[in-house]
Image (tube, rainbow, N blue to C red; front, side, top):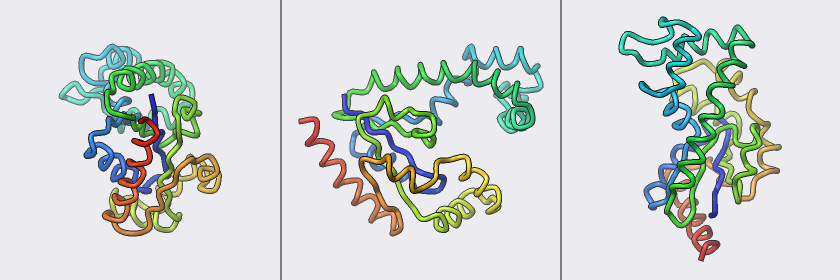
Length: 197
């Protein structure tokens, strides 16, 4: 199975690209979605998190209070390690299951930290959505209404742009309009279809 690992820095346009692939009938498996799926109400991971951190880790509706959890693990590395030991295997299983269920000609696997976590090993090709850092900061600040300092902090946890580009098999440069980016996706789509013929 041809699996395209889609990655890029914060604010690079990964969602636009994955949405376009999806609209072309290609299965998109998203690591962020998988990480939310495993902590949904009724999932074993949520019960484990609740029994570990106490009932206050849930909202009134019984949903995981992500902001509170982020705060706890940001200030306590042992709690972060515990949480990762609970979540990472389940997220991995969820992703593997979704990839196995894909029946499109090829599959796109979206992971912001694809290269940082060495997940490209399960992919046939690495597709990087690339954007200069100043545009990245402007777009993210506008989209998420967060400060440039916060964006730079998130970006610094990600691989450097040059290093990411070195590891890419395919690159989509996202410095133009959404329409231009989608046109680049269409060209890649044709190439990927030819690879699986």
